[in-house]
Amino acid sequence: MRILVTGGAGFIGANFVRLTVREHPDVEVTVLDLLTYAGDERSLAGLDGVRLVQGDVADAELVDSLVAGVDVVVHFAAESHNDNSLADPSPFVRTNVVGTFTLLEAVRRHGVRLHHVSTDEVYGDLPLRAADATAPVERFTEATPYRPSSPYSATKASSDHLVRAWVRSFGVHATISNCSNNYGPYQHVEKFIPRQITNLVDGVRPKLYGAGLNVRDWIHVDDHNRAVWTILERGLAGETYLVGADGETSNLEVVRALLEIFGRDPEDFDHVPDRPGHDLRYAIDATRLRTELGWEPRYTSFAAGLAATVEWYRANEPWWRPAKAVTEARYAVGP
Ligand code: NAD
Ligand code: TDX
Image 1 (tube, rainbow, N blue to C red):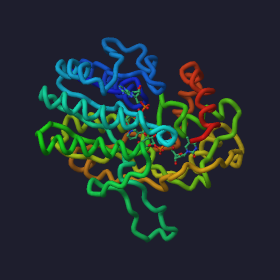
Image 2: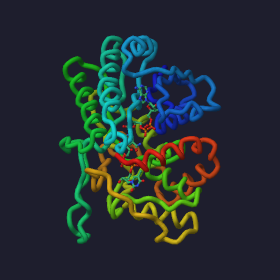
Image 3: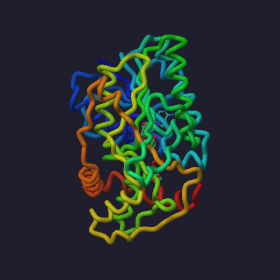
């Protein structure tokens, strides 16, 4: 099998390529990645036989020629950071919407299968869990209506709608996954967990938006990528699968867990101004993926996964150090 992985030099894409080389060595991998600030060739270092093409997923000619030579496209390429989408939404529209459109046209022309990687943020947010433990708990399912909040999530929602329309109107063979927040190695230091880990390495206090009560449903990146492989192998054409590992944790709890790993006082963090429009809570009901396709997460302890991630950042400072000061300078300006 020959796979084109768009965005394969980014966080989840690079981990997907690594997992593929490890667990599916017969697969031929080509990566298409623009190598924006978020992409890093070094995330693919040491892999034999992976071809990296630097280019834009919205470049129709290039995309057409690459799609013509593969059996499957797995589409990770995106502008992915909510805070950046508040400062300047335009690259989000181009990459996430026009880029997905460009790919869809190419897979339609060449009859190639597409897996579109998306996010739970397309569903907007949920209320915090009620204090009463017997109250019903709301979670996203495949039937939840779309209600995106940020420019980022609106462009991801748009891309999902394009995929669904191309399935229905043109019979394109595509599947979609909507996953919750990923953590693990090779994640850019702009994101919450790597930002706080690298702050702590530098002796800087973690920065918590607002009160820190917002909840994210954390999943290890390898569990997400194994779900993508499960969908490639057993998913039904035209279907959507939600991916999550029951990892609901408030931002405050994440910061306290990191402070504990670093042996610091649990109150040793700063509250900083909240993100405008900040989604309150995400939570995934992955029953369909578990029961219909037989997927199960392997990282069942968030604490252990977090500790391993801290170890990775401690051991790989040369990988993240060049981006740290630039990223913090951007945060200092604000949206
Ligand atoms: P990332 O920002 O780390 O990586 C994105 C990659 O896409 C980078 O390598 C970048 O260079 C590349 N890219 C950007 N614009 C491009 C373009 N025009 N053409 C080609 N390549 C381009 O993002 P990530 O966190 O790895 O997310 C990957 C995908 O997974 C995205 O589609 C995102 O919406 C989705 N997702 C992410 C999460 C999460 O928690 N990070 C959760 C669910 C879904
Ligand atoms: O310094 C910070 N302090 C803080 O409290 C940062 C960077 C974030 N936060 C909060 C905001 C969120 O509630 O932490 C939470 C996680 O923030 P991000 O890492 O920016 O992720 P989020 O906005 O939840 O979106 C992520 O998950 C869904 C990915 O970036 C998206 O690409 C994915 O679709």
